[in-house]
Image 1 (cartoon, rainbow, N blue to C red):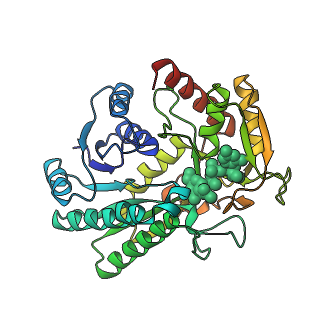
Image 2 (image 1 turned 180 degrees about the vertical axis):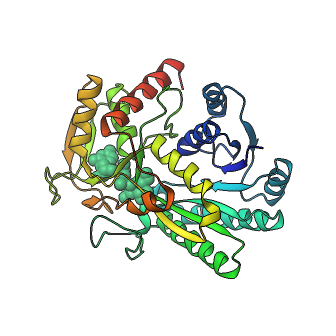
Amino acid sequence: MPDTILLTGGAGFIGSHICVELAKAGHRPVVLDNLCNSKPSVMERVGRIIGRPVDFVQGDIRDGDVLRRTLRDFKVRSVIHLAGLKAVGESVSMPLAYYDNNVVGTLRLLEAMEACDVRSIVFSSSATVYGVPKQLPLDESHPLSTTNPYGQTKLVIEGILRDLRQASDRWHICLLRYFNPVGAHESGTIGEDPHGMPNNLMPFVLKVAAGRATELSVWGGDYPTPDGTGVRDYIHVVDLAIGHVRAMERLDTIGCEAINLGTGRGTSVLELVKAFERVNGVRVPFVMKDRRTGDVASCFADPSLAHTRLGWKTERSIDDMCRDAWRWQQFAVAQGL
Ligand code: UD1
């Protein structure tokens, strides 16, 4: 009997790739998503990759009835919880929406899980909980802090989950702290598809390369990094998705644990742009601009705990990330997505 895994936010960039990897590993994904930042057609495209339709419930995690019904009807064994708002700038201007969606939504989900006797959860956290790095690479013992409401919601939820385990050892909880997910499935038929103008680097590079924006603004060329531009730990979304499958499979051995998912390697903005141009044979015109408020110079993971606890490490390179992201962008343009 395959395990049925509920994916909240499963129609999103990361969730759609987790669906594929869960199915590949012999599990049965069920997606609950309110489609506030994704398109319904993504589920059809995931279905085509895995060779069968994916169970999909359109609903909101703040709706306890729909949660309980889904958990019971599908006999869910574990939850991978990704649903949430994630734009830093927007969280500063709309904090209430962020606390409501992310924190209240998570509370409703955990209540529904208790009611249905489902106590295994993998939570989508973020390296944003480390705030400004005091030392690099960042390991899980680095002090936690944050600079914006989005990061605050991640910190609050991590705290709620730790308290839950403290209260009952029937809960099994893995907090996955992602670094910078980019890339796309190698088929090129699913990928990151943000509504509106993207803020993150790779989606913007894709827009420029596709001629949908004239040039990339490089936010800051005077950081104390080898070429002066910001350094991040970019991780291929398929590696990230496989990390979730491993975490879910090992939940029984985990009480409540935070684990980084990153490559351990830093790449600068200009290195990423150059790799993208070289691998794909396209031009990405850019202009140097002032630093973006709130950005840090460098941020990269110590991913060794993921290796020891989950038997997981990344396998895909920056070149793979650039190639797969571009394949997806071309598909999206051709399909009018
Ligand atoms: C950002 C968020 C982080 C969140 C993550 C989600 C901020 C300050 N941080 O991370 O909390 O978890 O997204 O994916 O928003 N860059 C450019 N030009 C651009 C866009 C980005 O030069 O048009 C640079 C940035 O200055 C940075 C790097 O590219 O050095 C990566 O930026 P981005 O993709 O936005 O990710 P983070 O800032 O690391």
